[in-house]
Image (cartoon, rainbow, N blue to C red; front, side, top):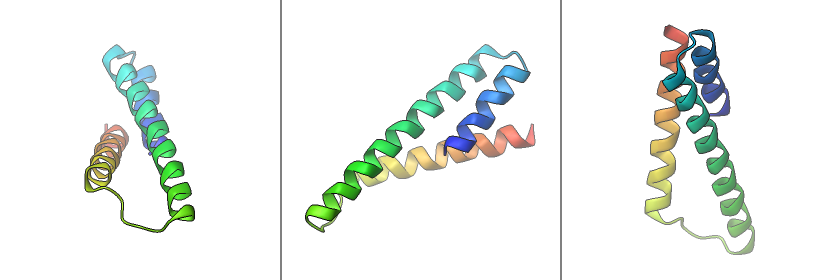
Length: 77
């Protein structure tokens, strides 16, 4: 996700496109949040194995798909 976010950010800088730059920064923030969620989940599983809450997992899946599609779009343009 971080690589895709950096691709979008780089495209924004190269094209001098402010909205795309802000989108890249937002994607970097989302990627950082996903890292924090993953670390929290890893610690939770180390303490007591169990199922994750469906809402959190669905949110993570949506974030991964959105940032990945944006990275693919950045590579194609």
